[in-house]
Amino acid sequence: MEAELPWGGPEEERERKKFPLILTTTYGNALRADKFDVDVWKPALAAAGVIPLRKAGESVVTPARWLGHSRPTITLDYYAHFMPEAGGKGRGAIGTLLARTSQAAVAA
Image (cartoon, one colour):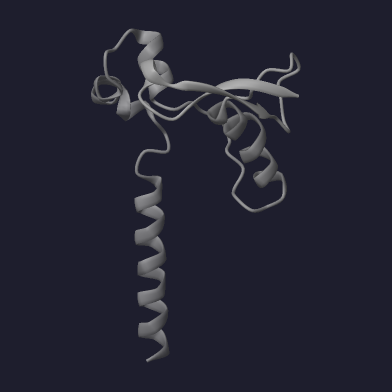
């Protein structure tokens, strides 16, 4: 399938070129890269065990839009304490570091 897509230049001045598409929507339209990434690519990588399976959730941008906030930082300022995974990566990194340190101390 061929689709006419914007190519190069600033948004208003973009020329349009026709490109053959390998993947399309069910209606034959071009796929949005972000939609494909979230709905197809990342789940496929998780199913193959390449990345961990994402349990659930949305980007902070989505609820910011739902709530009418002009910037995602406003949403984070008000609601970050509700996010159960907040700080999880940091706690995991510190836990790993402390485990290695205690194992090294026992071995010495």
